[in-house]
Image (cartoon, rainbow, N blue to C red):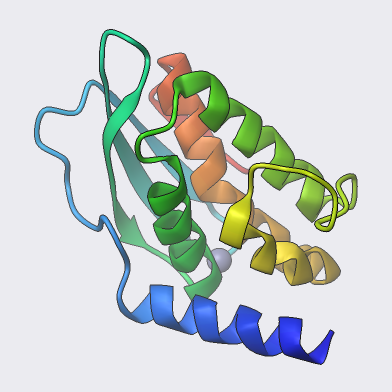
Amino acid sequence: MTNMRALYQEVILDHNKNPRNFGTLEGANRRAEGDNPLCGDNYRIFALVDDEGIIQEVGFEGTGCAISKAAASMMTVRIKGKSVDEAKEMVAEFRAMLTGHLDPDDDHNLGHLKVFHGVSQLPQRVKCAVLPFHALEAALKGEERTSTE
Ligand code: ZN
C-alpha cells in the first residue's frame, strides 16, 4: 500500500507538471468542455476519431488542480489508438473504481490509471479525477458540455 501511494504521488506530480497531449487539437471532430465548479477545474477535451471509430489523436486544455490535470493527461495517453467503444468502457471502469465498485486488482482496461484508486478515499477529490472522463464521454457522444454538478 505504501508503494502504491508513493507511485500515485509520483505519477500525479509528473503528469501535473508535464501534462501529455496538452493543447488544442487542430482538426478534432469530437470536443466537449467539462466543468467541476466545486474545485474550479475546467477542461476542454478534443479527439480525432477516424471512419473505423478509432481515436487517432487526442488533446486537452484548461486549468484545474493537480489531480484533475494528471487524470486528463493520463487519460489522453491511455485512449490514443483505442476504439470509441474501448474508451467508453474505460470511462465506465474508471468511474466504478473511484466509487468503490471496481477492484483495481481485477481485470480491467485502466492500465496506469489504476494509481487513481487512492482518490476513492478522498470523496471531495473524486469529481476532480472523474471530470476529464465525463468530458471525454460527452465528446464521444457528441455532447458539447458536461458538469460534475
Ligand atoms: Zn480539482
